[in-house]
Amino acid sequence: MFNTLPTTKASQIAGVAIAIIGAVLLPQLAQAAEGEPKAQTDAISGEVGGGIAIAPDYMGSNDYRISPLAIGTISWEDRSLTFDGTALSADLLSSEALEFGPIVNWTFKRDPKNVESAAVKALGRIDDAFEVGAQAAVWVDGPIGNGDRLRFSLAAMRDVSDVHDGWLGDATIRWTIPVTGKLGASFEAAASYADAAYARTYFGVTDAAALASGLAAYRPDGGIKDVGATVSLRYAVTDRWSLVAEAGYRRLLGNFADSPIVQSEGSADQFHAGVGVVIGF
Image (spheres, rainbow, N blue to C red):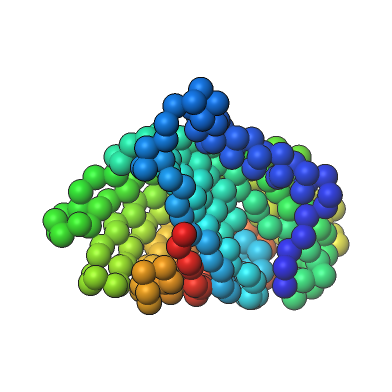
């Protein structure tokens, strides 16, 4: 099922997305306005694609749903604009070793109409959240030495949609390996942080909600939200068409795992998977 945003949030997302695209394209537009010749390396390239994914209905759920999967990257002069799952990010540095730029993330709503647990359904609705922040990454050569590379990245984001009003952080290590001429693989380990405002929105139970749901009242603090790993494969069918697949696991930790929403009605073990097709241009 496709998820939809209220008109006001859709406008916010569109506005920030346009701002990010403008920030990336502005140097190129200025160069063109000055009449400077464009080198061949300035040519825009990239890929777009889609598929299907399966993930928990909401954070901490043990019920799963199938949803669309969107993938896309536009790049030039080592700068890039990437859409991956729920995040839109830009790399503003013309560097093969370093990345830095803004990031926008969409956290899906928890809609009682789509929740199977009667207790969680009684907690009420949480709207889609919209977080904005920045990310930075460093690329280094991998340990095998056959073209494999390691990427270390950090991201920090804050809600700007007045849904949870909290901060999020992510740290990831990705190892990308060219297995054969057509097949590539990547392995990623990640950990995420969320503050108390976020934790209480998605994992807390107020006194009033406890009476309505039968769950114990719970007021969590922030901290390390989860750790996990993802394996991805990519197979080049032709020079332009590729098949992609990934499977991942995350484990909720600490105050997040101790929530009655997770302990009584869900699971701290969170799985996801997806398959898709991309075409280059």
